[in-house]
Length: 114
Length: 113
Image (cartoon, rainbow over all chains, first blue to last red; front, side, top):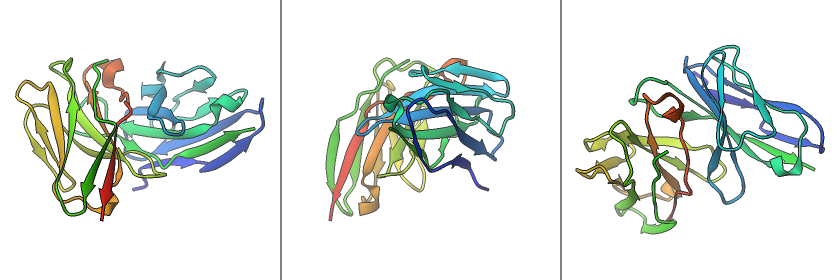
């Protein structure tokens, strides 16, 4: 049981480059989400999904795209990277319709945009 | 989204109990109270959650006020490995869009040997 798997763990991009951060979970969770965490700050929600084919914006969605074609995968795309997107990115998943479970987080992707 | 208020930092001595407070005066009837912690250089980790009654698990206990406007996370015997940022978050699992977790700044717990 792998839980939530994020790849890559580290990435350096040049300004204007594009990339996709991968997130996969094997717990059959309906709910998946992406957060970013800047130094010394809490996590801010970028995008989330309550099931395959359904996505919505969080607190800081600008500059990021998501899609959810399967229950297991929820990739985060940066179309044109900017230095302001330098951050640590966390993916999380959970069951939707019950309060009896917490979120499971991945170990993060540390992204630097130069 | 209902907000929570936590102290910025707290200190504890190793092997002593720690009580981490959280105020959530605007909590709604369907909001669950969740606690997560984040160890240095790691992703957040689920600790415990509850709705109305006090809850215990292998990691901690959660004491919820009768009016649900505040709660306290209790670590019974702090260890050096408990040094982390602790987040108190409200989550409505039946609210669709409000199912999401919104993090505040949390409480940085320092544990002294």
